[in-house]
Image (spheres, rainbow, N blue to C red):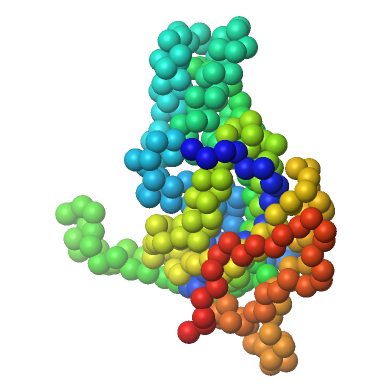
Length: 298
């Protein structure tokens, strides 16, 4: 593996959805998540991390050190036991070894072998205790630029489950849909924490790939067409603590509805209906990077 990253990064990530439900809310019958006061659409950080994990699992599962810790049907204690076997130690229920070096070795093993632990961190203090790790990458909820409308559709199923129901009418179900929404998420990468978990330049490269292609491995009819739109990243060159505050940098990235749509009071229905721009001056010690390649609008 390459060396841990040496620079702090803050980034603004835009993605959109067309005719889909980007993140259903189980507390609301799987309706698209919204801010009830503004009707802006929401996608949780957990949802986005899941897509990153799934992409890495799909594309790099056979690569040493790129396994995924939090995955479907994973038994976490069994994964923790791998660290104890590698260290030739016997686990005690819910306890780390009293020897700090041995305890750190268990945590380091987990960081070395699992991409999502190195990246997002993990609480591994279960029955088979491997400690806790605070990850260098943190994501916010994604929020749509404008309010979204949740459309509801009735759907039918012509087949039945049991033979006794063969003469019944078709089963009616519901499906929810956001006609269009452009969502904005903020991300932070702490290089001091990256040194502790071993998050490397290679891991950063893989993260960029995930942000660019994670929707390609997550297709479903329910999610419609989801795609990355743009990712503007700020690299802090001279100071690990940063050369500027993240909120000051994010405030210079704007996404606005095009004037002609505003004038005609028309809702957005594609990414081309928005103008995304970095406005203002780049602070000293900051480099601006584009992590998602721009494609021409068809």
